[in-house]
Length: 395
Length: 134
Ligand SMILES: [Zn+2]
Image 1: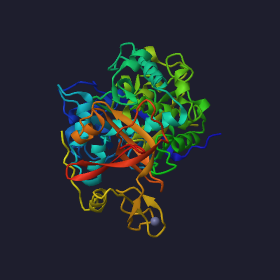
Image 2: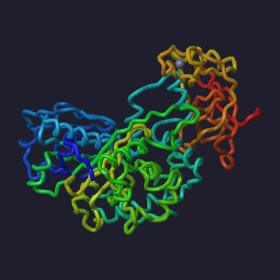
Image 3: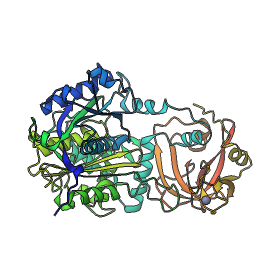
Image 4: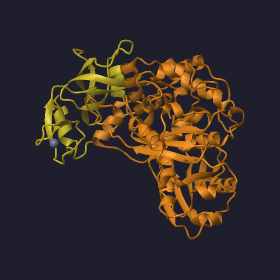
């Protein structure tokens, strides 16, 4: 028998996704306001019903506390920028639920918007530039960069190589994640990449930073996604099937970069996943669908392990067995994920989780969609958010 | 492209030592814990001291950045690819370093490496390669 606290009194009632990808005709604020209007309309509400706003910037920044003014929102009772990098979206859901349970506000919109892409600049280059432009290192920082560590791709490659060395996981097994997700993406009209992908394609793709091939790495997208969180009783009388947060956790591990460090081997998911499932009153066997943060194929694999869907070190074999793809026993990243659909940080897995829990996945809809496990991951496995969503209200 | 590596107040003693072919890490005078060179305070709050380390290390993990723009001095030492890694000192701390002269076909976590010093800009930078490499 689950024990539900008063925190579990809110539901996700609206979802708004703008056009995503190489879309150059909008500012970050325009993307955000478009997504918010879409989410509010999706819920069957108007902007006048909104009394809380939690916004999230990508690395490009640009969203400010002026956002309510741009929307004409007045008399808000909650307003904040939330940032935990890739764990932000799940944190936004958590803070919205807590704010509603605590009586701070009734209907809170959470939005993430980013415009890292510019015409005629490559995706990786655009993303790297937005990071590198922020500092000009001296001393140890400069020595690290000159030594070859130049941003997220390098750091994740370091983590992935340590993991591969420790457990004998192969690049082909990483590739199984990319291939499975592309099969899902081919059924998602919103996905940026919908042409077939094979393990051979994955292996033949250029190195981004070895051991990561091109198809191990997420895409980069312009766009925005917003959700509406409101009291469960209210959500039940709105336009969409409510989606209920059953359990959640944040774990921001912090690795000692020294002997016996877990860096690359175990992430915050190992604590956050079980904690969120315990709060939800479920175990991994109750989960119908996984929507996992997949900045890299490797990230999805260790999250599966850390959540307990397979044993530590067996995530590669687990992926290669075919369970993650359409028809598999554990449908995972059913919209194509960040690898093949769109990259809007934690809103990518969260948005697909909402679509699936509602039963609105169209051609790619998973038949049993009562419980969806969602992850968020930020930094280099530094920040983790776990969220269990249910299609039914907690009893 | 040459990188003009500039020391700052926190790295000055480190680069004074590398110029002499000596590698420094950090040590807590209170609890004797060792830290990487960039660290300034122990978890217990104590300001860290410099401590010499042998220059011997083991490989923890590594990456190959095929498209990297690298300093000519590094390129001369190791060709066009940029190999970087995390090494572990005998005292325990890790450091992110450039790797030179390693054979990518046989490289493995746990391999023994040792420090060599390369002049990059105004400073001598420790890079790591196989033990006994000239
Ligand atoms: Zn100490």
